[in-house]
Picture 1 (cartoon, helix red, strand yellow):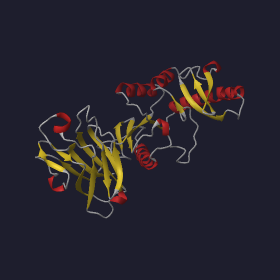
Picture 2 (picture 1 turned 90 degrees about the horizontal axis):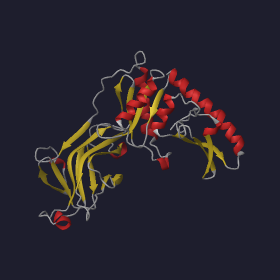
Picture 3 (picture 1 turned 45 degrees about the vertical axis):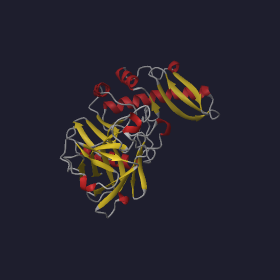
Picture 4 (picture 1 turned 180 degrees about the vertical axis):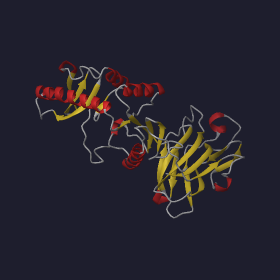
Length: 339
């Protein structure tokens, strides 16, 4: 992300991977002996050298190909570099003038987050920005102040480990700019919660007590208590556009129809103006969301959203039940939000 933004700062963690528990152990010990030559090892991988800091289980790219430098010389260089970068990180923590950005692909346990914040506070009053994938109620680019020392920012998606450059630059930049604006209004280094105008949205609820009925086209069964089934292979829903925006966030609360082993999963494709904007394969149970590009909805009072669900099946056929409808996905709520 820094490189895409045209910045090349030095940092111990910039290209490194480390389990959070080992990072916490390093912070607690002040990274003692991290640059000990006996704890720095070179490992040839895919034509380049990887550096292993065995004291705290760091791994990072040396950015040196196998034939570019003698391994002995590279080892001496890394011993100097690691010591410098570790000290630089500790100095940054002791004199907090930066926002610390933290993200990881794996689910973050509440206890792990608390331990991280405790470890950081041992050096100084750092501000932490926790980055997560956008979800219901939190469109891409948004930032919330959790407390006076932490913000939570949301981006369209987190890049997979196997494709790190495949990040969503635009939502990262929007999120970072908003985080920086909140930080610039901090008082005595403490974040202040600010009143935020609620995002413009069109919200629909399904079922006998809901308001979605007038918005539904083909491919829907009748309303039931608290939900309504999308049936057959595709469904149409027409949603009022809540206002102009560069992009929109579509939120859905869903329950896919599954009956293992014959029907273990459902797929849901979201199509706007003939453009596939997101495929949920498989579709999880609960709240899901996706981005709709603004140009697909520009200058329209309403938008037709076509939902493809090719694995619709009859409970009678796959489970011997009395229902012969071809069920796909049960919808409880749907909202279109100006992101």
